[in-house]
Structures are given as structure tokens and as C-alpha cells.
Amino acid sequence: MSNELRNFLALSYEELEELNLKAKEQRKKRTPFGKIQEERLKYLTDEKRIKAVTVLFSDLEGRLHMLDYDKKFLIKSYDNLTFDGSSIRGFTAQRESDLRLGMDWASFYWGPADIFGGGKVLVFGDVIDKDGTPYNADIRGVLKGYADSLYKKEDYTLNAANEIEGFLFKGPDAERQYHENQKFEYVNTGGYYHSLPGDPLRTFIDTTAEVQRAMGFQNEKDHPEVAPSQFEINYSYTDVVGAADQIQLYKLICRQVANKMGLTASFLPKPVVGVNGSGMHTNVSVSKDGKNLFWDPKGEEQLSKFGWAFVDRVLTHGNDLCLLMNSSVNAYRRLDPHFEAPNQLKASPVDRGAMIRVPIGNERSMRVEFRAVAPDANPYLVMYSIFKTGLEGETAKIKNLRSAERYLPDNIYTAIENFEKAEWMTKLFGGDVKGRYADLKRASADRCARSLGTIVKAPEVQFHHEVYNQFLWNMF
Image (tube, rainbow, N blue to C red; front, side, top):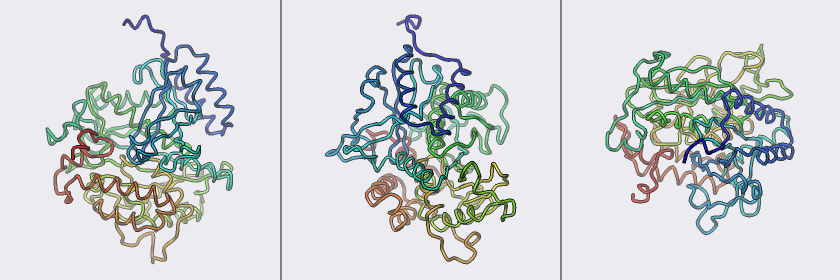
């Protein structure tokens, strides 16, 4: 069928950026939900060139799922969108499979037609249980509820920004084919900050950055990273739920751009041994009435007492949280001290081996950086656990807590054991969700060699939660 016969929405990148930044400003100003819903429904009704709405949600492990609803159907049925939750890992059992999706109309995105297809818009969904309450395994909904409650009770705004590293490999399906080739092939070996204009890595970075800019990410900088074929594309702070959503969109955009180039964007934490792995440094702060509560020009490292208390609580629970920040077998290859690995349970302004770094900041930018987060972690789990622990967790009576010689686990089994034993994790998620998550992580680990060894094994790629083939998984 000729494209000339179709009249689907396809906006310029400049128009897309304008629309997405306007939506972002509405979220920042906390425009009432009813007003945004009315505005979005009117837009969808009036914009005849839109054919479908892509609704996004994430499972318990952080894998992004998407459903396309016909626009006319969605306008009529947006308050009763059911789906089979038993098919989503970590969600309901078969006997109680019906879940619903509620539209988070504030989290509405216009995507470039050349990347996502013409005639579509994207919106994040809230997963709702049969009784109409937020579903307890939908951690995005848990995070959103927590952030909203803090704003109502304390007038706190939770802010975050992430530095997400990844690798670009040859071939459109390199991770699925790893068991055949037993290796990943670089597209570039230029190294840190170096890539010639027009080469595959630079073209990929440029294209991805353009898409992000159009989708309102408000880019800051982008560059090749230390390892060959490694990249990082940075963007600005936003509210915590928006920041976690942008991580999911970032990875989706990267994968889509790479696939259209016949390549693979991989967010495995350590896909190649002998070179630096990929991290997802997570920068956080808390503000009240527009004031950054982490800033104190007279404080140690100019971090306020409020900020240091936040750091101390997370350090106290560091081993409890490790499985959430490093959620795959492959992630524990990255926690290698030979490659600037942040595996030490301490805080430092300069030591890149520290789990928490206190960067140089000012009244606007003061923050703390959590370096021990892998790029394959569920961003909603990471954000929720960091903020709730930092604000409400316990503080251990350990001498020199911020510099004591303590280390994160070097394998997933120890991390699972720590997670299961931790009473704080039960308080965070409840026994049911905590148990489901641990079971998922153990099931993945049991499909891989227990000893990491010196080579990346095929099963740790094949059965990775962002890669796995469901047919293969069921044959195990």
C-alpha cells in the first residue's frame, strides 16, 4: 500500500520538542490530573492523523512492555483496559490474571515517526488490580504513590537524573545470537571521547541524541565512553517518576535506533571481559519550596546534614539493596575493582570505587551519586528503594560508617541471600512482592554457571531478563 494514501501524524523534530517540553512543564507544575486528562482526550479526538496509542508499563524486573490500542477504541474505553497479567513475569498467577491499565495522562509523549512509526503517540500506564487499587507489583505505581504522598505531607519533590552507559555491537540481534558466536563484535575502538564524525558509533549517538531532544529529554552531553564501542548520552534532572520513565524510553530509543542501523544497543553490565563495564550512575536530591535540601555551603563537601543523613541510611542498607541495583548474574562481573568498580560500601567525593560519590555542586545542582547501579536494573525499583531508604531507613552504629572497609557482594547468590534476610526489604515491598522478586532472580541465576569465571557464558546473556527468549526459557 502506498504511503501517499496514508495521512498519519508525522511532526518535525522541532514541533515534537515543543509539545514534549510543554507536557513536561505540566508534570513539573503538577497540573491537576483531571485537566490533563480532558486536554489529552480532546487532543486525541481532534487529531485525525493519530491511528493508535502505545501504552507502556514495566514488569517487576524492569522489562518494558507495550500495547497498541486503536485510538477510537481507547477514547471510549480508557477507563477499562484489561490485559492478561499472568503472561507478565512477576505479575499475577493464572488463576487471577485480569489486570487493568489506567492512563497516566501526564506521562504522554510524542515520538518521531521515523523511529516509532507514523500516527502514534506514547503514554505510560498505571497497572490496576481487580479491586481498583494500584497493583502491588507495579513498582512504577508504588514509586508514583510514594512521591505524591511525600509532596502532600512534607512538600518534598524527589529529583533524579541518570548517566546510562551501553555498548553498540555489530548485527541487529547480537545478544540473542551470542550463544552461536560466543562474542560481541565492536563497531568502534576509538575509546573515551573519541569517535570520528560519520562512523557508526558517532552516527548512532547523534541520531539517538536527536530523538531524545525531540522527546523533551533536555540533553546535556553525549560521547563515546572508556571501553570500545561504549556510549553515554546525558540529559537533565527531572521529577523521580519522569526520570525513571526516561530511563525506559532512553533504552527503547537506543535499541530502536541501533536496530534501524543493523546494529544492537546492549545494556548488559559487563558484556565483554577485560574492558570497563556499563553503569547507570543515579544522581538524586530532594527539594522543598524550590530549595535544594542537599545544599549547605558550610557543610562537609557542601552537602547538608539532611543530605549526609540520607547517605548514611543508604550505606547502612547497602547490602540489602544490592540485588535491586545489580539485578542480573552479569552485573556482578562489573563489580570488579580493576575497572573503577563502585563495590565499596562507603561515600567519597573522589574515590570512584565508592558506592556513593558526592560530586562538586552548587545551590541548584548539589546531589549525591549512586555509582553501584547497573543499567539493566528496574529503574522504578532503584529510585523507590534509594529515596525511601535515604529518607526513612535505619542508621547503623558502625564506626566511621562513611569510610569503613565494607564491600558489596561479588556474586548474585550472596546478594539474593542478603535481600531475603533483610527486614527492611519486607517493609519496602511487602513479603509477597519481595518473594516474587527473589524467586525471579534465583531462577535466572540457576540457569547460569555458578562461578563467573573469566568469560561471559552464553546462559547469562540468553536468560538475562532484558534478553531472554520465552520459548527457550520454557525448554530449560
